[in-house]
Length: 232
Image (cartoon, rainbow, N blue to C red; front, side):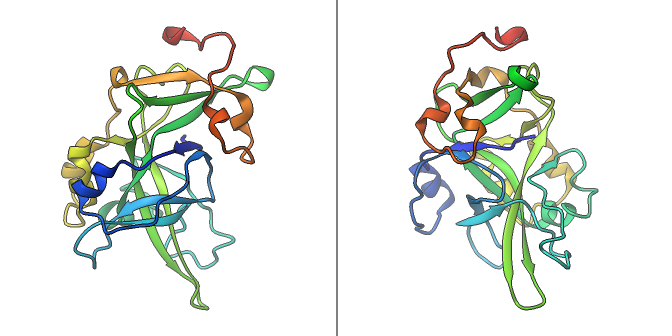
């Protein structure tokens, strides 16, 4: 599961690559959590090109009758999304890119539970594959929300967690967002673990455990024992 991430800067080259309309710059975020609004790149089937929007992290199915009673999914398993009523329509028609420059996972239990921060080797931002939905309530209320796709972990993440986000390369962005691409044959090759050798991990401060903390100290390296297994 991916339950926290960072986005401290949006790469200008993505705006040019995707021909995004201008959008308001977002402040640096170091501890983004579920239920918050997150920057999302999507392409509405009615729009000629992608756009950047703020969506609620926690997908609310379009068919849900009650926004408060419905279970909000922050993650969707890539292997089964096409079969699940909550995700299958979104996988075919409403895919998104979630810009991030790192994400957190935790390992251990109790007093030995520690957060780890995963990034690209060079620290550059990257995109997690996402799904989005538009919900309208009986009184006319509208909510746009999203979930992150996950897959089996690569060799870097496996010692710490049994899942990892689906990370897309820039040359996959347009195809992922194209609403005309709908078959599993076209989508499945993109839903694979990102190469471990292109990433790095840092054990970080427990400050990130509280969603009230959202500052650079969250990604500060912890002075502690190294993580288990091949990461030590």
